[in-house]
Length: 215
Image (tube, rainbow, N blue to C red; front, side, top):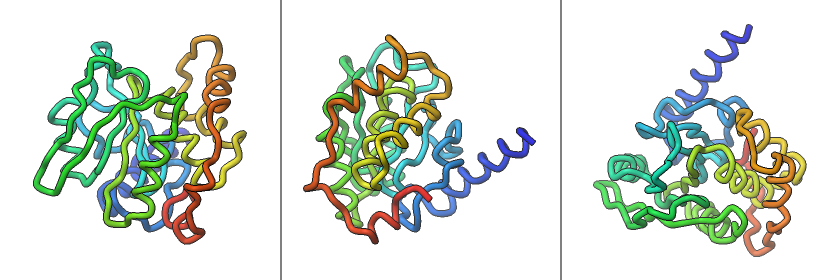
């Protein structure tokens, strides 16, 4: 039964990525798609690459981590740009990263630092994509793809989809795949949410929610 479930998750993720593309907003991702180990079309070398808001927000990290803290490789930036991403954020760990704009045949993708304890710039970027249908999605990633990127994703689900804080924390906890947390996982995510507040200025319509929020 577990094998069948795993196969269904992989197939579901592949369909989400290849048939509809990263930019489609035809209904939010399913729970299985949000929890897939790694999307089949993830850039080479990335891990825990998953949808959060369809066509708007994805999350991820690096296979084996990013111990040098240098962020996305040139090839990964190019691939994301070609796939239609408009912006990427490196949450918390990119101290040695060269943040710059990647240009490709389909457009450009900017790259910037982010803090999981100061989420406002990421929330504003996501809102800008939601309200600009022609703009490509945002990727938020961290070193491994489980803690910081997950926290910012959980906050986005509260901000844009009306999730409760408890539900968002439960999502974060399940999606970290058992990874440990310094000081304990409940305390870690509680500390991040203590610095987050829903911004009324970033409210979106019911139609926009239906197009992107999880099923």
